[in-house]
Image (tube, rainbow, N blue to C red; front, side):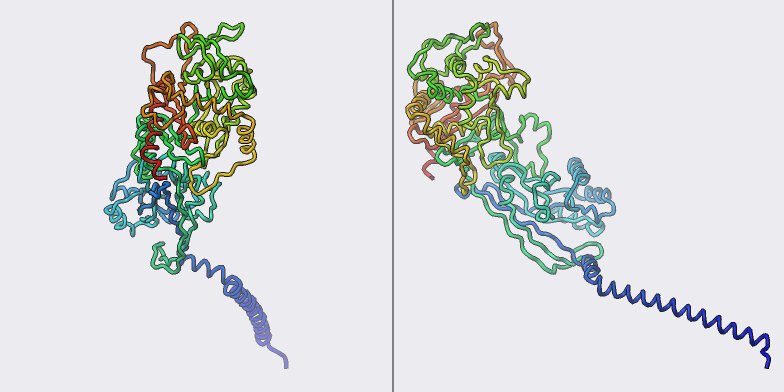
Length: 614
């Protein structure tokens, strides 16, 4: 039977439908397989990854900084402690409008222009965390006001932490140093993981040098947070390990007394035990209250200018010509190299001249000292005698000998950023000044002037070597550490003790004793209470040169910045010395009039009030 046209079309339509249905089934099957694979990948293969992401959205990991170690003096009196501290912070990643938040906080508690400026500076700089302090040291009323508006602004929070507190304010400022906001430079030195949620670190002084000891190890908290990032509850916590305490060699009562004597001047004084290198007191003046510097911003730029660089630690960084304080060492050099003999006399007129030169190198005493030997030259600080000695020694013998006393090198004290000073040579002058060394340079180096620069700690160190007849101790501030002498120091000590005769050491020590205790000594009239058998040497450093047309310093008033520096080194008692001192006072006058009486008052205070405690 023949199929009709309609039957034929029906068969074709069924075939087409079946083909299309098969294709659709194939597509659906492929899609189903892909979906199953994807589900398997998400649910099984990537489970840990997405579970972590989900957990992170709900659970927040917070590193908790440790309590910073406490710093004590040698008698367990607190010098640096921690106190509760509240701050307004803005998390710049969570906040939608930082300016709006700042304005809201300003309306509630009032922000200073400087606080806002500092916030924006921190915000623009590199930071290893997102929360930035807007205002610190909040009182109770300010805390309540900020908490009342916190719910309105994502990223705004009030945080509690422990902040450094220095009970003795300015008195210990330069020794202890300070902590400050972590910056990019700090992160090159610090363990980023360890300091992840930390905003402050030691910047200067003991706080910087012993940062690894004082900081400790951080802990952590895992807390549940809501969609706005607010903490709901604590889930897990591991306590931080507190930093270790540090006990210093300082005596705070002695430090207070020293500060009272220097607070009206610019300069430094250091009292040190020559037997073990312990620093009993160290003051740099002027200074500022470190508690103000941390959070109150009370010291403005104009006040800082008037205070003559109060944040500059003169004790280890101040560079000064040593003046006549190096004359005992130069005399020892002359004796050792047999350039002079202790009893040989010379005529010391009002000035010294090099052969074939018209240049006059004047003595501090206009009429000169007349006939002098080595002892009298030290006792009366005769410049002309040491001009002659320096010229006969030559700069090479001078500098090589000064190196034994650590001039031109760091002493190794446990403080950061110590300066090396300048011990000039021909090579140094060519490199730094661009001219060759002259005999005139040698002459003025002989009285501690010219290019020769030293720090107060170097002077104290050198004085301890004189007091010890060549034995060397490295100055230190941490009472519980032993300062190890390296090979270089041991070689120096061996030379000073074994190559220089005890007789030469005694000659220098006897002369320094008479500087203070003999009527014509430069420190005799300036020193009361001589019963502690103090030995010493004064120094006066000229800040400007006298004209060649006159032998007398002009009497008219001169600006303060051109006045002489006043210096003094000393030790006591004469036999078996227990302490040494080095003092420098800037732009004030002669060493015998200012630095000497202040230094010897400090020495007497030690023996009368402090010594019995040890």
